[in-house]
Length: 183
Image 1: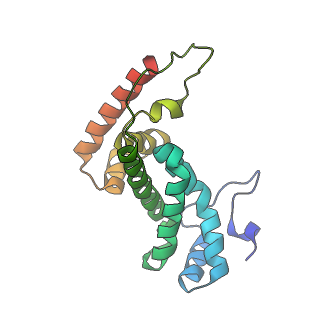
Image 2: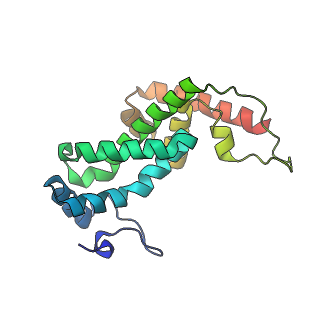
Image 3: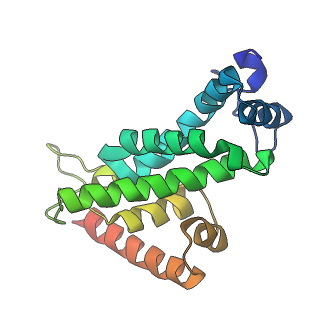
């Protein structure tokens, strides 16, 4: 299969959708041990995984993405429904990003300190800077709800926490984000 046939997002084209027959065929081939199919599949997933991991694990995002791709590679044979590939990979990426971010926070605890004002010409604040000051759990819920567009129940299932906890974390994460942004 050539890259163009896989639906890999080339410039000016859209990424393949959940359940795309070409992606399902690629998953089946990779599960059967086809090394080229596995490579193509990981190439297809890499941008999505990197985007999620980067938003949650921040500077540790590349490490989290690599860990997630390794986990996907190792457990692909366990995927029972190939049409659910993207959701399955997203769950692995979020778990790995949270794990790596928590480990990084333990290694170098960051204090929520002074954040430059939005109008400060010498040191502009961007979203990543403010996110870096939040706890990994808060970054994850903000990314899933506000960037990925997941509803409460989807985020609850993905993070393996009750819906009430999703609501509480989202409230606290948004409050912390606003407080840091407004400084």
